[in-house]
Image (cartoon, rainbow, N blue to C red; front, side, top):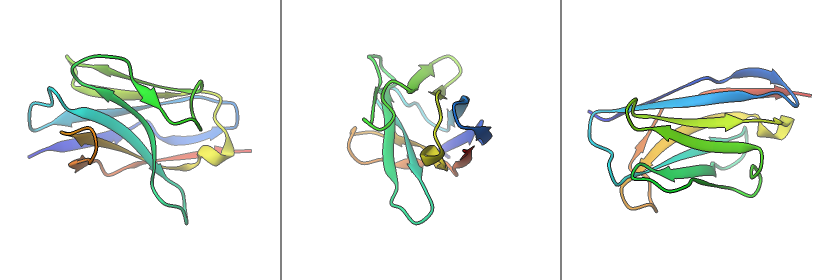
Length: 118
């Protein structure tokens, strides 16, 4: 049974930092792309960042570029999202997801809430 379990969300003031973690289990994710998405109240879910388990640098949405960094630890089967210089508009539920094709995502975590106060 595939599981993606996020953690690390919370309440932070604007300008602060948080690091989200996503532990993946239940299958071999070699060759998969791991992504972070977010959904704010009343808005559609949007892409934040992604990285391949097999290597290469991650990439991120323009809205978070220069502030958020995605990384992974293959030994721990964990994907991270380091979020710096947080803004109130970053407030959302953040989801971890896994994609076999790099386009559509097959597996999703339950989400972790990030709230940034002004």
